[in-house]
Length: 258
Image 1 (tube, one colour):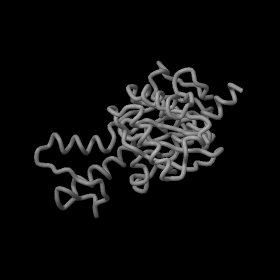
Image 2 (cartoon, helix red, strand yellow):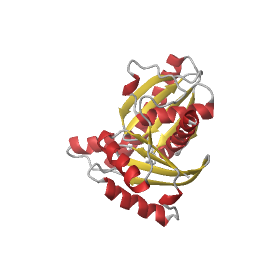
Image 3 (cartoon, helix red, strand yellow):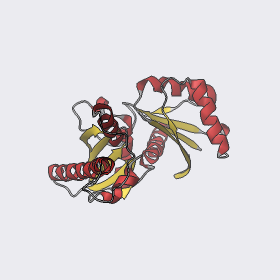
Image 4 (cartoon, one colour):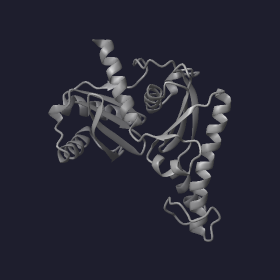
């Protein structure tokens, strides 16, 4: 089985593939203070609870946007799994030209998402990833990574509102009864939910005009399933897009090495 690890700023997502089928997945909090041994104990416990053993892993692939943790997870793989991980980093074979001023600046997770989205769509597409930041990644009809957009994530936006506006409470992200709020909590929920979705839809329309393509829009990330039903532009939600992208990149690079 293939073990895939996506280390994000807020959560780390783990998955196990049997061939192209995602057998199991887990989400844990990202903690920069944890050691390789501590992550080993945590991951072993959640795998065991699902009937998955480390001995069943034949290979491992990692994408990481938290540089201090990359070495930690490399150590975990080598010491505990006894496997040399494939890292999504400059030099890895992606099959996707990166049309950026500095391709090394692009986060590993964004490239992984773009590869998975294009393999599915096989046409111009936009990936909207609702993570700590919300990112828009644009892929051309020829499968080129064109660039994208980065905005503060919905959680960051809500927390900033609570921290900087003295009289505003911390609220749950939920759909209010109407756009026009009748109390402070509903007004904030309307602003954060409907306002954020309007930003997403507006940004997608601007991107489509600039691309001169009716690009297919795929959403992923923690808030995707909650926000997509309110959106007029999101056409599909794929919560496993990043994990599938890691599996695709592993297959691509293992064939290259064979």
